[in-house]
Image 1 (cartoon, rainbow, N blue to C red):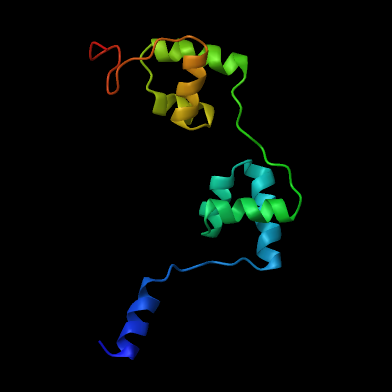
Image 2 (image 1 turned 180 degrees about the vertical axis):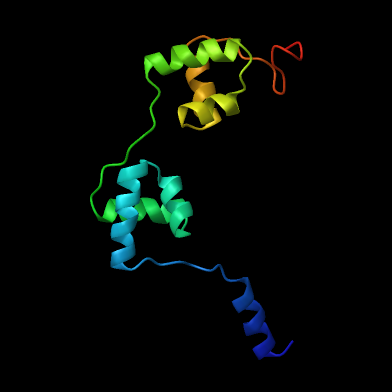
Length: 122
């Protein structure tokens, strides 16, 4: 294969990177302060979530973590026992389904087998 063809093929394989200028970084910080979510900032600006986190770190911003309170966990446990899925609970509480699962297990809630709810006999 000719060298020019190899270079062209290599160039096609490279990942596209988005770099935010200072003004866009300032907007990303505002978006983070408003939403409290790295994922929201990453989606809104078309950047990787690690890039969004790096911008916050460079500007000495404290990261927010969606921590479930005891009240959230009690509510989630009740709704889970009523048949809500972990995904639906996560969406309801603004966290990932895995976060809900870990919190419920830590609270001693018995988990249903995957893909089941009260209506499917699980």
